[in-house]
Image (cartoon, rainbow, N blue to C red; front, side):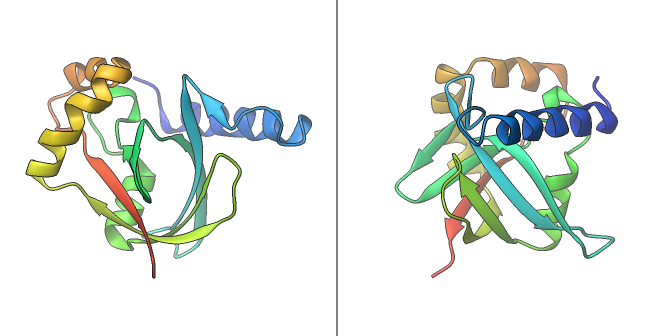
Length: 143
């Protein structure tokens, strides 16, 4: 399974593409919008920003999948938002917005998971790699 270092290198490379293209490239990946998520580090208290894809959205709710590529551990960004659910989000290079993150409850996950895996079967493959249930995160605008 990919290590945290690999994910950091990929995120850095992705940021490089965004920067070198002046933001013209890199805001979409595998048919999904790229989300720039800023969380508060649960141990450091520092802001941590990562680029993720969002396989699904409804109205103003953005859905993220805490898959970590099917690893047995949750991604750090997920652990951070569990500790502090107020986050900052930019979708596809749009304006940053304050949002509140919550893990989908079992009923919501049961409804959303088939919609996500039908469009993006890689997530189903990630789930088969691990015994943990991969969480879905719902990002809702702060009013």
